[in-house]
Length: 168
Image (cartoon, rainbow, N blue to C red; front, side, top):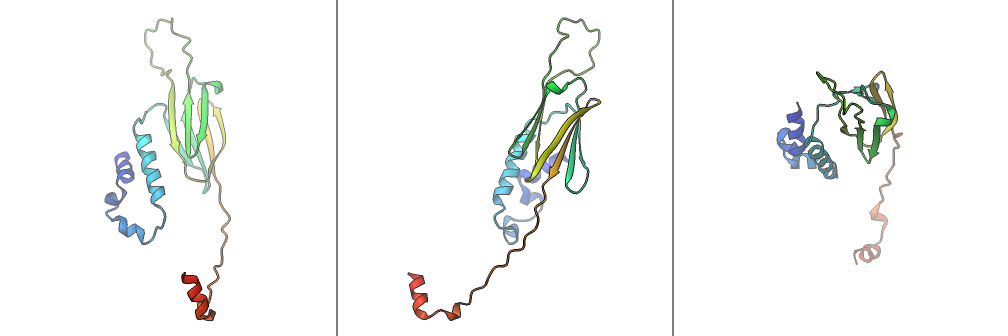
């Protein structure tokens, strides 16, 4: 699945089996969006860590939740930043057991950074740690649709003199 998504962002037209000319007929001015998605995909796919595990849930039509397993991290160890449309969650560790002698160490106690690309108009509503799970609530701000009427002007009412003045 990840390879298909990566291919889509790097070469969307080949994956969809269409040419860019097919999109030009229907999507005017979206080239910047495609470029931005491709850039984000390249940045995010460089280093895809498996730690810590996380879930992304769609709670309702306009609400999402990111749940991340952060057992052993306190509130002061977690840093969440939103830079444009990039949500970055960083976990810092303080290794108190440097001098301890382990017979077996199976609990991961390492720092991490996870980055998520958010769509436009998604706001971080809240973040809390509950029973070792970091829960970040996201809210998609919905615009009220406004219909704009465009007046069509009748050019037949203009005199020939006005047309000549406009062309100069």
